[in-house]
Length: 299
Ligand SMILES: O=C(O)CCC(=O)C(=O)O
Ligand SMILES: [Fe+2]
Image 1: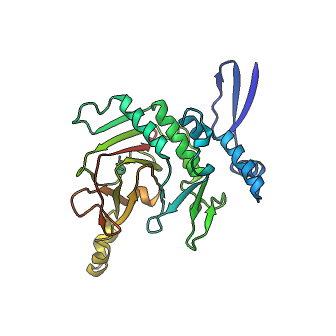
Image 2: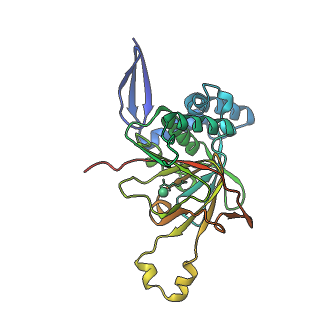
Image 3: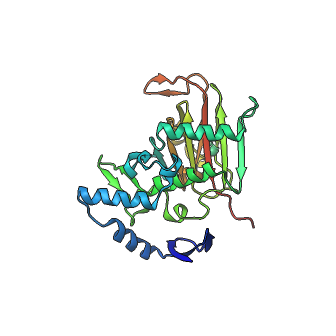
C-alpha cells in the first residue's frame, strides 16, 4: 500500500482508495520554515514562475473548480486584496472569481433547486456543505493565503508571515477545520436588501461573502455601544452618519474578522438614493450572494 505523509495543521488520518494518508500537525515555526523552503525568500522572475507552478500543484482548488483546467487560476495565483483602512479586519478581493467561475457557481446554486419557488429568497445549509461550496471554501482559503495588497504608500505587498495584519485572515482562522460549515445563499430582486446587522454570535469569527450578479453597495456602520451613549453630542453627530460604503461587484469576496465582524454592522439598502457609487446611482438587477461561516462549538 502506498503511504503518503501530508503535513497539515490538524490531525486527520484518512484512508483513500488504497493509499494511506497520514496527516501530521505542524507548529507555526515549522510551517514558516517549510513555506520559506518551498517558496523561497527572494525570487527572480524564473523562480517566481516555478513558485507559482508549485503553488498551483499544492492548492488545486481553483483548477478543480473549472473541471481541472489549471489555466483558469485567478491572477496567476496572486489575489489582489484591498484592506479597508477604516475598519480593522475588513478585506475586499474585487476580482476573486472570473466570469466563468461565477457562471458555474450560479449553475450549481440553480441545480440545488432552492429558489425554484419564486418567493424563496434565502437558503441555509448546515454541517456538510455541497461539493461546490467546499471547493469555493478552498478557493477562499487559497485567495487569503496567496494574497497581495496595496499598502498605504501604494506599493504592492505580499502577505508577511510575521505580520498578521497584512493577511486577510489570521492564521488561526485560515487553517481551522472545517474552514466553514454553514452557508446561506441569498437572492435579492431589485430593491431588496438586508437590514443593518451583526452576524449571530452562534457563528465563529471569520466570515466570507461572495457576490454574484448585480453590483451593489454594502454599508458598514459602527455598533452603538456604551461609549457612544456617553460621548458628547458633537462627537456623536460626527460618528452618527459614519457609514463606510464598499462596492461588491460580481465575483468579489469580502472577509470579515475581529472588529469588522463584531463591532461593525453591515447592510445593503437598495431603496432609491442608497445605491450610489462615484456619484452615479447603480443599475439594479437580481443579485445573489453566498455567505460562509463556521458554527461555534456546542457547549
Ligand atoms: O448578501 C450579502 O452580501 C450579505 C449577506 C449577509 O450579511 C448575511 O448573510 O449575514
Ligand atoms: Fe451578515
